[in-house]
Image 1 (cartoon, helix red, strand yellow):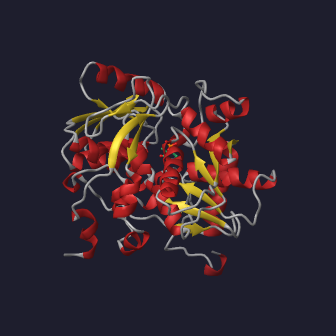
Image 2 (cartoon, rainbow, N blue to C red):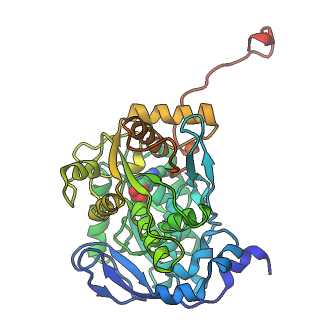
Image 3 (cartoon, helix red, strand yellow):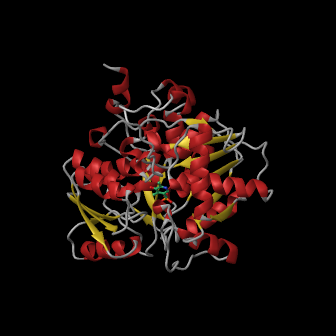
Length: 410
Ligand SMILES: *Cc1c(COP(=O)(O)O)cnc(C)c1O
């Protein structure tokens, strides 16, 4: 047996007890196909954490390969045969001392399959769809989620139809098509693409995989929080800056910390969670500042950071709750600051961020200047996709091999 196969072939029970409406607490049976709750809100997966904690010790966990499946006791897949893996690694924490500061680490999610952290959510959601017998899936996307869905679903023979705004980065549209989905460009924003998906789902044509409209993407994204706890030696950083669109990752990490505390692996101390949005699309920031629980749709949404151009999030109240409970805030950044942060990080620290990752660095710099964080605090910024997927400034110097200048001038 190869060591890296161990995580995938181990037989295990699932510790899932039931699912629960995130708004009303209403219970739903595990092992059945679910969308939103009857209140129209996301469902959360609940586990027998006492039993999971007895089945798995920190020592056992630490002896396993560091991939995503090392956390299987805290994940919903029942039959490991349903796992469709493309090699989901633990992502590194990369220091960015020059562009960020001595205590700033970037969790570089661009190393995951399909080049973004959407792989975490979609590997789990697709495995569960396979387990529950789904054969056709549709999804609205700003790019990366569609690519991850296409890759994992094609790998296990599930048919996919993907709808994206017509100004979605070209490379995303093409990678989605290349990986076997039927992708349509729509003259609208992501929530308008979502309306098409919802219409087809209501007509029984496909299963709706919109953000938080099926319960398992959160469970996949939760592994970011589990990994951070392990990487920080079962403590947590002081602050986390997360580029927030639908907010799945922020909600997932908050859930992970809660579950780890319940099994006794971490204490009650939490990082301050900073939800970062672009000033051209900042519904969560507005709701945070207005002191309300739900966000209004943001009209005329625009930003270079396509992944966080989400005018309306179904999980708005969950994002706001986590941010407030943590003592963090929701912060908006200007695109110009985001692009400068991407540029600085690449030139000074050699790490190419995606624009959304750049937004977290820009927000951190603003927060530092405003005294919200201290330079001594340990901070994690999320870079959610590889910078290689995004347009870069032109590099147009040329040389004529037959008429070389003095090479000292190059
Ligand atoms: C999807 C996405 C986000 C936003 O993630 P959510 O968890 O949906 O808020 C941020 N950055 C990139 C690159 C993304 O693809």
